[in-house]
Length: 315
View: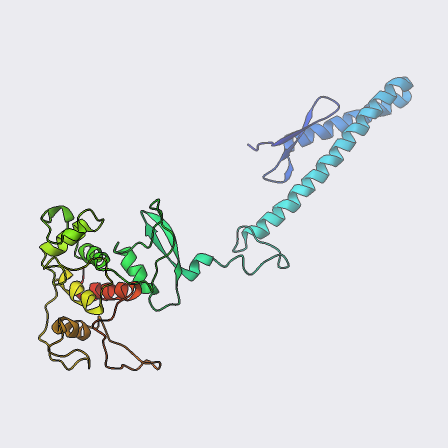
């Protein structure tokens, strides 16, 4: 049975009803309206011959009222039909809410978040404003973030600032944290003793403890300044040890500035052989043959080394 959405009173006490979904009059009430109009016509006809002018005038006024109401309903019905046609046209288009061509702004469909890497920090998406998607380091930073190795900077209230600082140096204590997380070490299983007393009370204390317990080369003696920038050698040897990589014998022939007497030369050459590092290149992209073992390493480069380490040595 159809349902009527709008009721319109007629002069004889009946109601006229509109079925909105079909854009037409409800048939039953439509017939009642027409019957009412026919009855009024007969009344007017008889009034012309039998009744007084006062009665005739009253019935004539009712008939005129019903006719006017009927015309209003017909107009409303036509309006509904036009609206349904427009709705059908919209639904047939790809967009649910289309706009006219002259009103469409080409920038409306351009999502600014698509231009920069977005990571999740504490379960909340954070857009890194200094990591554009077109930069070489973007995929490595995203990968490192997805593995929960990095999260970008935070303010004094521990809220993400939306900055990663790809060109900033990596400190020794930051390296310890990333390596511990990459190795999936449960920090509560690490020995509570610590050699490096300078880190006691620092945020990095537990990470340094674990690094010492694992006897990672840079941390094993307990004398390293954890606040200093890490060198390229520091990062390479720590990453390989975190992944438990097998170190190949050194040859001194991979890089011009890495000889058989260079500290941790075997780790550097092993990482190069696995494609984790490649040394410096000139402006044309050609290898210079130099690695720069004592050069500092930035956050973007460190993210790349860890990301490639995962690719080579797995999870």
